Image 1 (cartoon, helix red, strand yellow):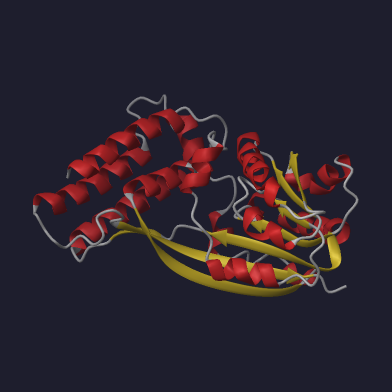
Image 2 (cartoon, helix red, strand yellow):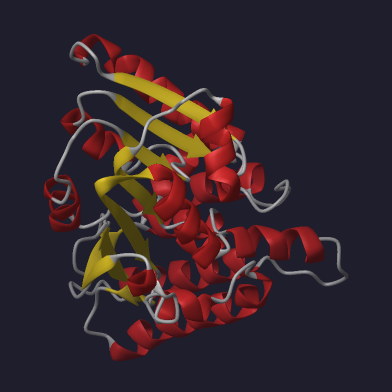
Length: 312
């Protein structure tokens, strides 16, 4: 179990440095945010890449560190724009773009806009960008906005005549131990449920919006819409799971509000200890049951892709 102990020592230091004194709802280290966020299904990325009719200009709203942007930008002959409210996130995206500059073709250009993406039309205007966009993407962020007003802005101000809006989303449905030991599997799953139920009330948006796949958003009022879903069990290490949950705004908000309370227990540390105990129990029993010791857990992730085509 020495390997696990080494990893857990890293996690303790990592959590102390990044989560317990977070400022605001945004994870403060853009590079580590980039490391711990799940990867969208590749077939969804391919669907996005083949959806546009034209490939002149592209806009990624709430680009974060550019997770979607840098999988799509190469198709576009002109401008690729990333807009983001978090300065630490957009700085990571800028660094990535800088490294890609030698590979850009003539006419291709990156622009990054720092500000409130609810007012994306104003950000675009203030940057003296007078273009319409053939593709607009929003990855795991649409629920942060006033959704119908943003759709109206995209429809009326930003999207080209035959443009496409692509919205990606996901949530963590469960955390599973990759073992046939039902008692330990339940222990880890219950630990995740406890963690989630503790921090979920501090979400800045209704989690039901994600679970329902934006069911109550009137997309068809503005666009022709196709929806697709996929559930993946993502093999994960303990570091990856704790790192990801540590980027959650609702967790960081919980920590801000309660970390000075008498008897405070960090719910992420409690979950980490639960997962550590499960690994130790298997290790002490010298069981060969644990599958893939490097990634002994699953994150169960339902993903959704919405492709909204402008039908003008």
